[in-house]
Image (cartoon, rainbow, N blue to C red):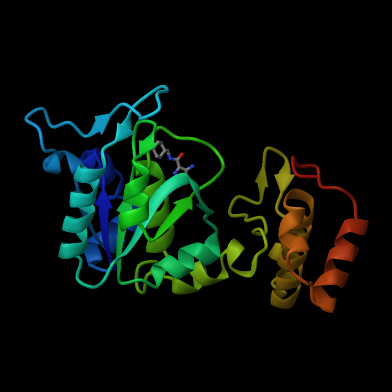
Length: 251
Ligand code: 4GY
């Protein structure tokens, strides 16, 4: 997958991408990132990329023309027709289904803003969709762009090393993850749940499913409200909720 990122802070984009799964995806060639700086398309000798908002008010607005030129440059360098996505709190909220959909593109251009926002005509003329990573406001779109790239990178073929891991991960079937444990068996008096040491694979699977259902019900009930539980899951959850509360922070 090829990703062009339009950003006034190219070094911020490049800096994040060298470690972990994302770094491996970049080194192994499953993912390529190119950065395009609107400053390179400023039309005055000061390199101006922002101006005061029409109608007044605080802050500055990103000029349309340097952004449009940058998006055009990115699209022209993309190896295939690129979908153009702008990261902003005004977008549709990103979830794992949205990540999967965008991971299916071969070329993507991510437009990041700074200051108070982007001239609306850029969105009308050159952006296919707006995506938000959550209902809070950051100082720029660079971190959201990297969040999106990171989430996409672990779905790309051959990047996780263990592609099963990406597929079985929490949000794919819409439930939160079951709790994980590794050595030692006791940490500050807290023991690993005995079923995980039993060697009974079916019992382990059943326990993990029950834990995932319980956590989702307790922490994110709206995720369960959107789906129908199988009879088996409903029975597991009911039995789980009858039991004692965990002595942890999630009840
Ligand atoms: N939340 N999800 C987000 C954000 C910052 C002013 C436009 C978000 O995606 N982006 O908070 N972005 C703003 C800052 C220009 C982007």
